[in-house]
Image 1: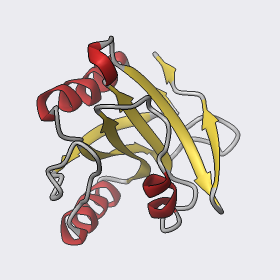
Image 2: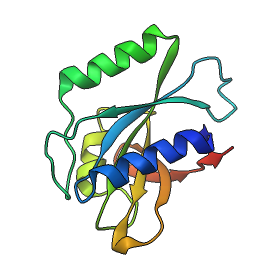
Image 3: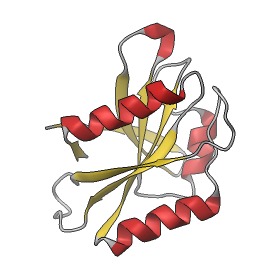
Image 4: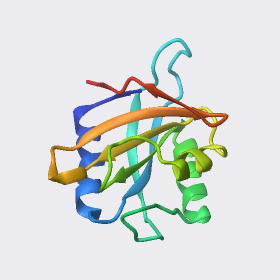
Length: 139
Protein backbone atom coordinates (compact mmCIF):
# COMPACT_ATOMS: atom_id res chain seq x y z
CA UNK A 1 0.00 0.00 0.00
CA UNK A 2 1.14 3.53 -0.70
CA UNK A 3 0.49 5.96 2.14
CA UNK A 4 1.26 9.62 2.61
CA UNK A 5 3.36 10.80 5.53
CA UNK A 6 0.28 12.67 6.78
CA UNK A 7 -1.88 9.53 6.93
CA UNK A 8 0.93 7.48 8.45
CA UNK A 9 1.35 10.17 11.10
CA UNK A 10 -2.42 9.84 11.84
CA UNK A 11 -2.00 6.10 12.48
CA UNK A 12 0.97 6.67 14.77
CA UNK A 13 -0.79 9.50 16.63
CA UNK A 14 -3.81 7.27 17.22
CA UNK A 15 -1.58 4.49 18.59
CA UNK A 16 0.19 6.90 20.95
CA UNK A 17 -3.09 8.44 22.16
CA UNK A 18 -4.59 5.05 23.03
CA UNK A 19 -1.43 3.64 24.69
CA UNK A 20 -1.07 1.67 26.82
CA UNK A 21 -4.13 0.08 25.15
CA UNK A 22 -4.16 -1.03 21.55
CA UNK A 23 -5.81 1.26 19.02
CA UNK A 24 -7.69 0.12 15.92
CA UNK A 25 -9.27 1.42 12.75
CA UNK A 26 -9.39 1.04 9.00
CA UNK A 27 -7.70 2.58 5.99
CA UNK A 28 -9.58 3.44 2.82
CA UNK A 29 -7.86 3.10 -0.55
CA UNK A 30 -8.49 4.52 -4.01
CA UNK A 31 -10.78 2.19 -5.95
CA UNK A 32 -9.28 3.24 -9.30
CA UNK A 33 -5.82 1.79 -8.61
CA UNK A 34 -4.87 -0.83 -11.25
CA UNK A 35 -4.42 -4.28 -9.73
CA UNK A 36 -0.72 -4.38 -10.72
CA UNK A 37 -0.05 -1.22 -8.68
CA UNK A 38 -0.03 -0.87 -4.90
CA UNK A 39 -3.28 0.69 -3.69
CA UNK A 40 -3.05 4.29 -2.48
CA UNK A 41 -4.37 5.06 1.01
CA UNK A 42 -6.82 7.94 0.95
CA UNK A 43 -8.27 8.15 4.47
CA UNK A 44 -7.78 6.81 7.99
CA UNK A 45 -10.90 6.00 9.99
CA UNK A 46 -10.46 5.48 13.73
CA UNK A 47 -12.53 2.89 15.54
CA UNK A 48 -13.08 2.29 19.23
CA UNK A 49 -11.28 -0.64 20.82
CA UNK A 50 -14.12 -2.16 22.81
CA UNK A 51 -11.65 -4.44 24.61
CA UNK A 52 -9.78 -1.39 25.98
CA UNK A 53 -6.79 -3.67 26.42
CA UNK A 54 -3.03 -3.51 25.86
CA UNK A 55 -3.19 -7.11 24.62
CA UNK A 56 -5.95 -7.11 21.99
CA UNK A 57 -8.42 -5.05 20.04
CA UNK A 58 -12.08 -5.63 19.37
CA UNK A 59 -14.22 -3.53 17.05
CA UNK A 60 -18.00 -3.45 17.30
CA UNK A 61 -19.42 -5.13 14.19
CA UNK A 62 -21.93 -2.33 13.60
CA UNK A 63 -19.20 0.30 13.83
CA UNK A 64 -16.99 -1.62 11.41
CA UNK A 65 -19.79 -2.13 8.90
CA UNK A 66 -20.67 1.57 9.20
CA UNK A 67 -17.08 2.55 8.42
CA UNK A 68 -16.99 0.22 5.42
CA UNK A 69 -20.33 1.58 4.15
CA UNK A 70 -19.00 5.15 4.46
CA UNK A 71 -15.80 4.21 2.62
CA UNK A 72 -17.69 2.52 -0.19
CA UNK A 73 -20.20 5.38 -0.31
CA UNK A 74 -17.27 7.70 -1.05
CA UNK A 75 -16.23 5.51 -4.00
CA UNK A 76 -13.32 3.91 -2.15
CA UNK A 77 -12.72 0.47 -0.67
CA UNK A 78 -11.38 -1.04 2.51
CA UNK A 79 -7.64 -1.42 2.03
CA UNK A 80 -6.40 -2.19 5.52
CA UNK A 81 -7.34 -2.84 9.10
CA UNK A 82 -4.87 -1.26 11.47
CA UNK A 83 -4.07 -1.63 15.14
CA UNK A 84 -1.19 -1.18 17.50
CA UNK A 85 0.98 -3.48 19.54
CA UNK A 86 2.03 -1.60 22.65
CA UNK A 87 4.24 -4.30 24.15
CA UNK A 88 5.55 -6.28 21.19
CA UNK A 89 7.01 -5.84 17.73
CA UNK A 90 4.58 -5.02 14.91
CA UNK A 91 4.08 -8.61 13.78
CA UNK A 92 0.70 -10.37 13.62
CA UNK A 93 -0.20 -12.33 16.72
CA UNK A 94 -2.11 -15.59 16.53
CA UNK A 95 -5.23 -13.62 17.47
CA UNK A 96 -4.62 -11.31 14.47
CA UNK A 97 -4.12 -14.32 12.19
CA UNK A 98 -7.36 -15.91 13.41
CA UNK A 99 -9.32 -12.67 12.92
CA UNK A 100 -7.88 -12.16 9.42
CA UNK A 101 -9.71 -15.25 8.15
CA UNK A 102 -12.75 -13.01 7.68
CA UNK A 103 -10.83 -10.40 5.66
CA UNK A 104 -9.01 -11.97 2.68
CA UNK A 105 -7.13 -9.46 0.53
CA UNK A 106 -7.18 -6.77 3.22
CA UNK A 107 -3.82 -5.60 4.54
CA UNK A 108 -3.06 -5.60 8.27
CA UNK A 109 -1.11 -2.52 9.31
CA UNK A 110 0.43 -2.76 12.76
CA UNK A 111 2.00 0.13 14.67
CA UNK A 112 4.59 -1.12 17.15
CA UNK A 113 5.25 0.98 20.25
CA UNK A 114 7.25 -1.54 22.28
CA UNK A 115 9.74 -0.39 24.91
CA UNK A 116 9.23 3.31 24.30
CA UNK A 117 11.22 3.11 21.07
CA UNK A 118 10.35 5.08 17.98
CA UNK A 119 7.15 3.71 16.43
CA UNK A 120 7.64 0.99 13.82
CA UNK A 121 4.89 0.42 11.25
CA UNK A 122 4.58 -2.71 9.12
CA UNK A 123 1.93 -4.15 6.82
CA UNK A 124 0.95 -7.75 6.13
CA UNK A 125 -1.38 -9.85 4.04
CA UNK A 126 -2.78 -12.75 6.02
CA UNK A 127 -4.49 -15.38 3.90
CA UNK A 128 -5.29 -18.99 4.77
CA UNK A 129 -3.32 -18.59 8.00
CA UNK A 130 -0.16 -17.57 6.12
CA UNK A 131 1.46 -14.24 6.96
CA UNK A 132 3.32 -12.30 4.29
CA UNK A 133 4.83 -8.87 4.90
CA UNK A 134 4.02 -6.38 2.14
CA UNK A 135 5.59 -3.04 1.35
CA UNK A 136 4.21 0.03 3.04
CA UNK A 137 5.39 2.73 0.64
CA UNK A 138 5.50 6.10 2.39
CA UNK A 139 5.12 9.05 0.02
